[in-house]
Image 1 (cartoon, rainbow, N blue to C red):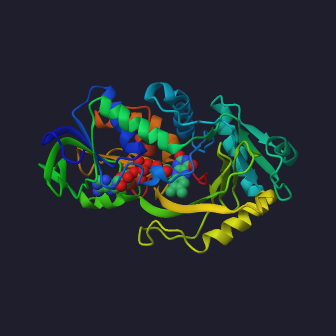
Image 2: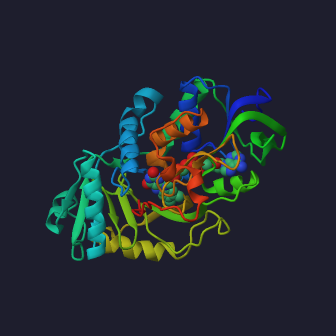
Image 3: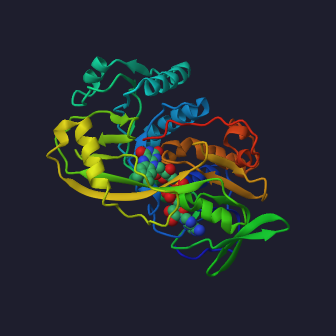
Length: 388
Ligand SMILES: Cc1cc2nc3c(=O)[nH]c(=O)nc-3n(C[C@H](O)[C@H](O)[C@H](O)COP(=O)(O)OP(=O)(O)OC[C@H]3O[C@@H](n4cnc5c(N)ncnc54)[C@H](O)[C@@H]3O)c2cc1C
């Protein structure tokens, strides 16, 4: 579908990635239609079709642990509700520390996660061998592990959402760009497209790595910014790696899919912005080869099948930006998810939907709301456990 069936909606969502589609799902379930989602590319053209599929509940921030735990429950039920199996495999997440400060960070994470009732474990290097025997442990001094974390295939999630929301009456336009926001009496009153304006009572900015750009199109200076992240997949080999493994020192994350490929990335020094495009840099392959073989020596003979990249949408404090923007009533921010929007989407978009409907949610606006960046003196509660 590329043309809207009406000229006025109650809600328009800009961006048809996992955040936009899940938001439309919660809103449709709440009977909040008519709802329009506009996506300028194809389904999965953004980060939602380019990520590592990692779903973890180990965080420094208590509210994020709760969102992630709820999301794990939703992904476990996803097949039943949406009719497609995302193959959510709970093989655990294993974080590795190589320095006292990294070990201290993992201890703090473990304390928060365990106090939320999740059976996270702090491991000694010798315990790591029982969970991931092929991981090189010579520099590892501590690790944290939660068995119910895991990985999934992102595409069935998008396809399942796409079919389900349309069955619930949501219109999803693919190949349609929101070029701007209609302002009506100081409020967001719809969007502008190449075919003309479309009116709405509320506009949701779920444009992922382009949400800062879309905020600017609405006349708002954004706090978030996109950064390119690269990722690759090797040829498939016999399964040997159960958990997603993350090394804090170089931001390396790697998991093995059910087909046997190793999928992962690492921190690369890309500056913020979209100027470099979603390409693969020549530096990725040697950097990843070094990191991967160092962590998993048995990967040395493996060939790389493909590499690609996408944008993290980074907020200054590493936490999502959720809520109505006080500078433009009717304009709701649903972005700033960094490298974690897929794992947080099912739960966080329920709160986005509440914000759209003017309902209170359990999220503290001082921690998640867009207004937190408008006061330079506000105390910040950053989430710094960023890789994977
Ligand atoms: C390499 C990589 C690895 C990652 N690994 C993980 C992981 O393991 N686990 C995890 O949870 N997360 C991971 N992420 C992050 C995760 O993919 C994102 O946080 C999540 O997909 C964001 O979803 P979204 O819907 O906000 O954005 P997107 O999926 O990017 O969707 C936004 C959409 O908006 C559209 N759009 C933009 N501007 C406009 C406009 N003006 N008009 C209409 N449409 C517009 C875009 O075309 C895009 O499709 C990773 C990301 C990358 C790049």
